[in-house]
Image (cartoon, rainbow, N blue to C red; front, side, top):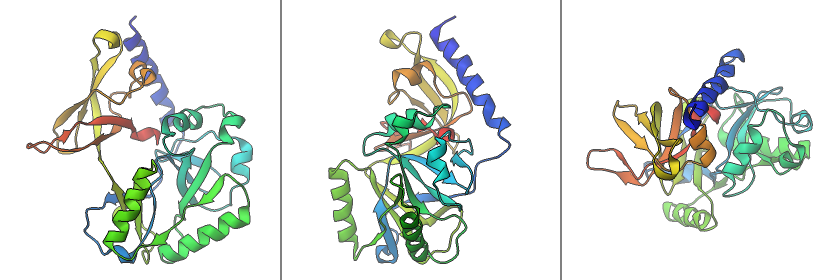
Length: 280
């Protein structure tokens, strides 16, 4: 049996438990892309942390997909007994290391001591976002634990100031900024009350085929064939670790990719695999 076939079978086996958890993906707020379409002075701005989205309902910590996160008991026992939304994070440029840590079924205490839960929302809380941000700061202060952090939410006076802050974050190795409408009530789904500002764009597609690798990737994944929301198809051949080439996302999985711009036909150019969306 080839390494690729073994990996595909393993990926199918790993995908099975999701149906046994008895819960679907939680309803959360998702960001639109900032394209200069809003009055930025009405928004509070924070750094966009390239972490793993984690939702806490007061008792259980789960990924965006609804799958449980197997954090150490001490990590979750100290969290406030109310709903939180944020990113598990280990620092700029550490996504792959973080991903390995938070996806283990048996957590490693030493590794989890380096993880921070960066809070940016209180699901279902009343009031505008400015009030919720203040409530987050108070909750984090009351908890008094180093792994719970309130993300700074700051106003901007103009688009020029926003651009300066964006360039500063990028120069420091950050991913970008997030803009949250200051007076917005809590909503779920994709909405322009939450905007992300990045130096490159993201897209999503559903895996429809595994294309075999050649040369140094012989016996491994060469590329993912994905179908976009409009029905067109695209190959993703870069951005994979060796482990991901041995254990690629399963057929039917939704994956996120990053690209620079669009071709004349409107397809993403220089698309690079980022992660499997269901694992977030």
